[in-house]
Image (cartoon, rainbow, N blue to C red; front, side, top):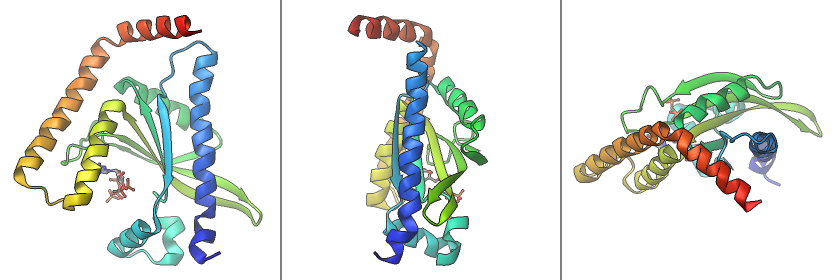
Amino acid sequence: MDKWDIFLSPYEQAIQELKIKLKGIRKDYQVNQQTSPVEFVTARVKPIKSIIEKANVRNIPYDRLREEMYDIAGVRVMCQFEDDIEVICEQIRNRTDMIVVEERDYVTEIKSSGYRSYHMILKYPVETIDGTIVILAELQIRTLAMNFWATIEHSLNYKYQGEYPPEIQRRLQNAAQAAQLLDREMSEIREEIMEAQKYFSKKRK
Ligand code: 0O2
């Protein structure tokens, strides 16, 4: 095993546990016959190449990575409606198995790129054979529309490294506004949608 495998092992464990716990919230709402604010959950450990690149840009030495790089473990929760974000945040804040150390509200404070999402930095204890290791993890909470935009922009950014041709830049800004409008429109008919989904899930049973 090389040093990266050993270093990343608690992060791998953390994302698996966090995924199960966040999916558990969804299940809990369902068994209580309530509509879940959690639609689906994804998680990843940052690739070694990206960790090294970010550490170089931010001047973070290897032995400070655990303290200073908070998104080595990344978990993403997608929801249907913008109001669900706050419901999920409250659930997370009230838990005793993870501690929220920072919150970044890019839903209200939209990034200049057009990016919208709610971020929480968590302290999460991982039990290992050498004792408890407390790691930092980044939880991103966003609607399906926010996720659609961010996923597309992320892959475009990979190609253009942030240096978008003006036409693409303009279209991305338009798409960000369209995603925002979509969230707003869906929120307006939220009750109708939820009723329909309740009816649909009853019928499937
Ligand atoms: P990946 O591939 O997702 O890991 P800071 O300078 O500390 O304020 P930092 O560290 O970039 O900024 O943190 P921030 O702003 O909270 O964002 C971290 C993550 O949010 C990013 O991780 C992305 O996942 C997402 N994100 C932030 N801004 C954008 C954006 O404009 N477009 C998209 N698509 N995603 C964004 P990484 O490490 O960039 O990437």
